[in-house]
Length: 210
Image 1 (spheres, rainbow, N blue to C red):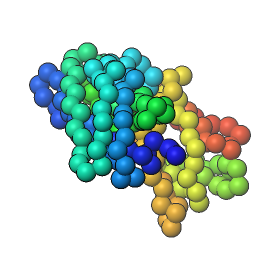
Image 2 (cartoon, rainbow, N blue to C red; image 1 turned 180 degrees about the vertical axis):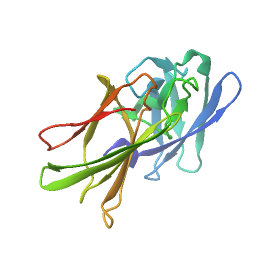
Image 3 (cartoon, rainbow, N blue to C red; image 1 turned 30 degrees about the vertical axis):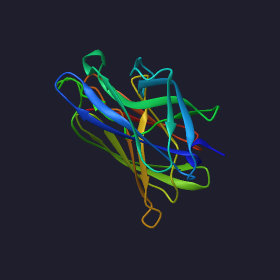
């Protein structure tokens, strides 16, 4: 039985001037008591950068089926560089190991002048696997970029800016309309070119940035 079938993990975060405070909320899913031991709990940068411990290592909790258990934590975000982060917990649930990512990702902003703004039209279609994919546009904002596309099914994409891979943050696709949006790390003002590689295509789409 998987970890999420035994204990549900939720996370609540609140930003203060010098730190982010929050709590993990644990509740058994199967109506039975469980023991949860935190082997490792960090704030992990989603682009593969440094991780920051949040002080839950070696904490052991007995989780009752009758109420939520709150496990508080706090970490200074001054120690974090610009990027998108998420909680990562390696836990033992009744002795069985699992790695969990409770809560939504959050951003430590880039300097205002560092990232691109605006929209770049692409309008390129290609064959990918068993269908055609059309990349419509790239929308740039302070903390993310969004790639809009049309395809009958969700697509796998690798985005590279000036040789630097940009991790995907979210992916939405509407089967009825065939429209999808991939959200990734932002483009920097210094970036000159974006490569959009679609799984199943023979070549990536190369976009020169204005």
